[in-house]
Image (tube, rainbow, N blue to C red; front, side, top):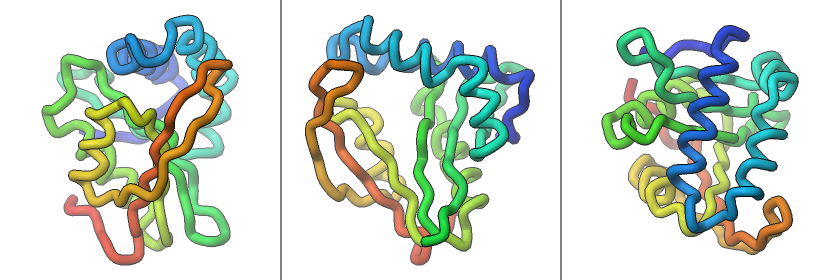
Length: 165
């Protein structure tokens, strides 16, 4: 089941973010850089703001939060960004990511495009986005918490495609 996130989900979302990042970026992004990013991005005040200003969706399996997605709302140009789509490692490749993505897309049905930024070495995520209709746009290097990181940008054309719910 996918539902809108609430204040009561903050601890679960934090746990999922840390578990997913540690699993995905081990050996790619140093642990101190990961921790710094996660501590800032998923602090309780930041999560409270996300719940008010963005779309937060939570995947529930057997009464447990096992994943979440976070989308910006459409801007004046009809564009949005997929900020995060994370699942506990043991629930990856079971269709929950697709359900979270499709649910988010249903909130953006009258938009233009949805962008997502992925660490270039995160092959699981890159393959997921490519398989779900996102087009690779560019790759660039940035400093991530002081660590050089190659990032790939993907875009989903909301005008042409509709989610299969």
